[in-house]
Each structure stands twice: as structure tokens, then as C-alpha cells.
Length: 199
Image 1 (spheres, rainbow, N blue to C red):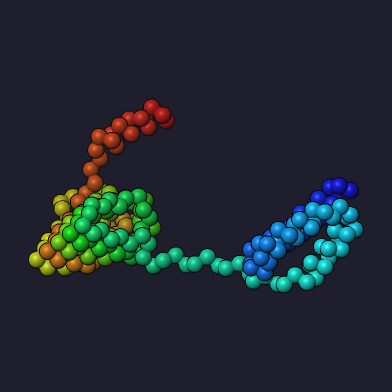
Image 2: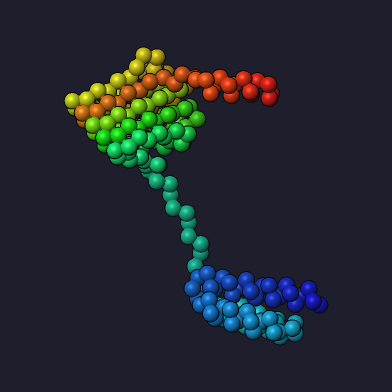
């Protein structure tokens, strides 16, 4: 019998909590209702209270759907500072703006969720360095104005079947946009060494 009382009381508390969450009841009303509820030990009376609340409880709105993902995921602004962007999954089109600063964007194959990814790079009196993994094709459509857009040797610039492609658009205004190939360093070598003995 005691278990039935506690279960019924818990159901009533849940009903009241939902009404507070949707601003039907105030917090003060909720606390006073709980205080009154704790003084009721008769299961018949609890059943009657539950039935009345169910009958009079207003219909709650359906839960809101989550907002759609933004078209520009984690677009970046670098202003008079240095910034490194790495390890973030890129959407199909993103924008990065650099003003009198330095922005390094590290892109691995795992970051690319689309066969073609567009990076809109606006660099003004600053430097944007893009470092890509081998096997990523980079095509530049960026326009330099008293600046430079450079894809260094070793970076694939011809589309190949099965290779993800990064297309760079935008402008380098008295600035530099440079794309270079990622080369493993000491830390990568040590981690590879550790992984060898771990496996």
C-alpha cells in the first residue's frame, strides 16, 4: 500500500513539475502544492487529486524541434591576433575573415564531410595559412589585391576521383593566403612509436 501511495504521489509531482516548466504554475504555487501533497497519506484521496489534476490539466505544447545546423559552421574572425583552427568538421561552405592578424587553418581528411568544401577567405593586411593532409586537392579561386595567394609545391591541385577537394574563394587584400602540405613532426613520430607498442 505504501508503495502505491509513493508511486501515485510521484506521478502527481511530475504533473505539477511539467506545469511549472511551461509557466502554467508559479514556483510558489508549486512549492505550496508539494507541501499540501506531503500531508496526504490516504491513497483514495491521492487518487482523487490525481484524477482532478488530469482532468483540468491544460494541454502542453509539443517540444520544440532543434534548430537546423547553421549554413556556416564555426566561421572564424581573427582581428589583430593569432589564431589556430584545427580538428573541426567543416561544412560545405565556411567563411574566415582575418584583419591584421595571423590565422592558421589545419585541415585533415577527417574534417571534410563533403566531396567539395568551399572556404571563403577574406584576409586584409594579415596572413592566412592553410595546412592540408596529403590526398586533399586544393583549388584556388581567391583573388589577390596587392597581396599573394600561393599553393606550395606538393599540394595536389588537380581533381582526382575519390579525393576530397577544398575550393578557396575570397580575397587577399594587402595580405597573404598560403596553402601548404602537412608534414609529420616530432610529436607525430613519438605518438606513432607509442601506438606501435600499444597495439
